[in-house]
Structure formats: C-alpha cells, structure tokens
Image 1 (cartoon, rainbow, N blue to C red):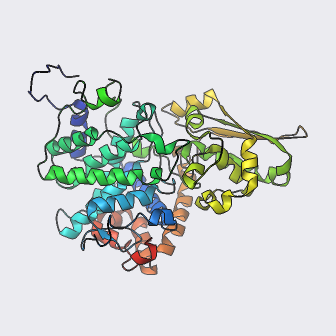
Image 2 (image 1 turned 90 degrees about the vertical axis):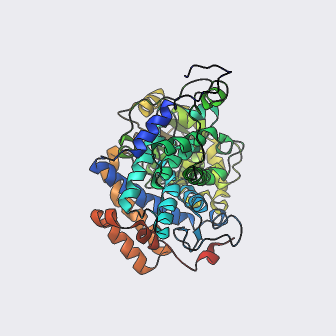
Image 3 (image 1 turned 135 degrees about the vertical axis):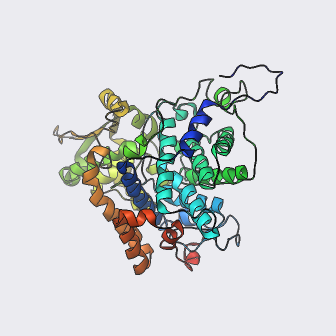
Length: 487
C-alpha cells in the first residue's frame, strides 16, 4: 500500500498490478507453439458457441445497434449477421453471443470465469481497425491478444476470489479486455495503465443474477457488457483521458478498501501463457462447468435406469465445494438461466434422455413432470477429496460422482469422473469433437463458400496466422440477414 497523507495531492507511482499488466500487454510476445495452437482451438470453439446462440430469440432480440438505425457502415461486423456497428456495440453483440449458452471455455480457480468472453472486445476492435485502414491487423495479432487476455483474467482469478465478496467474474473480463483493446488501438504502456485504472475504478457487477432466487439471463449478456465497457474505456484513453495511479490501493477510496475488505490484489505468478495452455473447453455439454463430469456420469448411467425411473428411491451426487455453493438448487426453476445453473436439473436430463443440449433448458423440455420428480429425490454432497483435487494446481480436476438407488434395495454402480472432456489431460480425445462442434454450428449459418473458406483457414495454421482480420471477419458476415434475427 502507498503511504497515505490525507492532505497531500501528490499523485503516487502507479499500483504494481497496473504496472505488471501494462508491461505484459505491451511486451513483444514470445509465446509457445502450444499457446498459439490452443488459441486457435479456443477461437474455433467461441465462434461455434456464438453461431449456436443465433438460434435463440432471447439472445437475438438483444443484438444489433442500441437504438434502431444506429449502424455504422465500415464498422465492426457481428458474425452470422449483417450488422455493422461501432466497435463498443459490436463488442457487446459478439460477447453476448459467445457467452449466451454457457458453452464456451472456462477457467476454474479461486475465481472462475470464461476467458473467451474477451473475444467480444478483441474481434470488434481488430475488425474496426482493419476496415478503417488504421493499424490493420492479421489473425496472429488476434491470437496473441487472446493469449494475453486469457492470462490476465486467469492469473487474477488464481487466488483473489472476487466472487467471495459478491463481485461477478466479468470484472476480470473488463480488466483484461481494456488492457488488450488499448494496446491493439496503439496505446503504449502509460495509456494501458490509464485505461486499466479506469476499469478497476468501475468496480464490479454484483453476482445477484447468477444465484437463486434471482438467476436470470443477465448472466448471458454480462460478459458482452464488460467487453463493450472495455472498448469504450480504451477509446477514451486514446483521446488522452487521464488515469488514476492508485486506483487499487488508495486508502478508503481505492478498489481494495472499498470492495475487497482492504486485502491487496494478488498476482501469484508472472504473466505468461499458463492460462490458455490449461484452459477447459466445453465440448459436449452446454452446462455450468462444475457439473460437466456429473452430466457425463449421468449419461453413462442412462441405459441402466431408463426402464426403472418410477422405481428410483434417491440419486446421490458427490461434487466439489464450489458445485455445492453455486449450483445445488431446489424449488421451481423459472427460466433457462435457472436450469443451466442447477446440478439436479443437469443430471436429471441425461438420466432421463441420455443427452444434454441447449434446447433441454427451454420450457418445452422443462415441463416434463419426471424432471422435477427426479430432482426431489437427489442428494447433493461435497466430497472433500473432490474439492482438494479441484484446487490443486497440477490437477485442476472438476470431479463428480453419480449413483442411483432403487426402492427394492438395488443400485447402479457409482460412476466417478475426475476430468471433463475439455480438460488438458483429455485434450486429444476432445479435438475431433471440437471440429464436429465447429462444423455443425457454423455450416448452417454461413454460405457454402464462406464455410469452406473458413474451415480451410483453420486447417492451415500459417494461412490463418497471416490472414488480415478484415478478411477473416468477412467470412463470418451475412449482409441482409439482420432482419431475420431482429426481435
């Protein structure tokens, strides 16, 4: 903490967190081939999530300009649509699409989150710059910005636990996106610090919308909102708007004293490429990540219980402490956002149907009375060893176990799964399925020519790396389809 004299107007040296973020973002990258390879997969996955979101009116009603007619010819383009928007609004659109179905990549630590949320800001700014002829970027610049944004968000999440004081993890999307957007726009070290200081001063959204009894759709557009704010702050900073050097540590008025109980922000390790190399991909199930392995276990049990559903006495779900705290939920579930954050619902669907898709959270499936009848019979327990494996840095497992007991005293095997399909230990198993997710999500939303060109670009690492961002975004743009997705 800085020495504090309440009478002095002398501005202090910048907070160390601001310095380290700016130094990292403005440095020449020397990332591993694994980091760039994983970034490519994460970009593929994020685009697949975004395109799937276009099937859901609850998402598409929020897309487009903030007010009718406020488009920008030559602006940033929104994939799968014909919208051309100012980059801040485009960042909201893209960020909301990627996040909408809770199907994008995940980082779990003391604070969890979804680092691909930052792509809303990155793609919008990069496309805008290319179309304006200012600082034209290639896709390697996008992949580099992704690695940096993932790292800033993920390292800040390792030990700080913003959620424990009620602050939503999208705070870290705003911090990371502000840093990389400012650098992409041409900002130097000082400007990045200025912009990021303003991002911290914004404080954080409350987690109200992620928890019962208020779970709602804001959790699907909150990341887009953070991206839009980040882009706005970056542009303001490039117009010489000032920064605040002790935004974090100023006594009484800084972030740490006001919102973090006086605790300093921890940076437990240097920034590198650790986060993206260890990212968790959601390949198979659009479900809150603490339940991914529970869903996989339930699907394995489906054939053994489907003919005996009416004979089930109880279902025991063992999970980690965060799984109990976040998604153990009883009572009526009023909307898809409620259902995809309820471990009992996410286990009931695969037990009954042998699947879990985004459509299974919609009302047409949720009205099946067997779902709530089964939820009532579920017991959710913390398994302490699961919690330990969750937090251990060398493992970062997300274990769950499911077992079904019947009224006649018989029972199924206890199915335990430690690492979900998208975990780094199961990455080789997951990549073919990622390609399937990419193909089935994008092919119906693009012209035949666009899809095949896009797929060829992803298959050729060098070609993708050297491709201008404006050319890449053109393969995702669909002029004339805005009317079909408008509310």
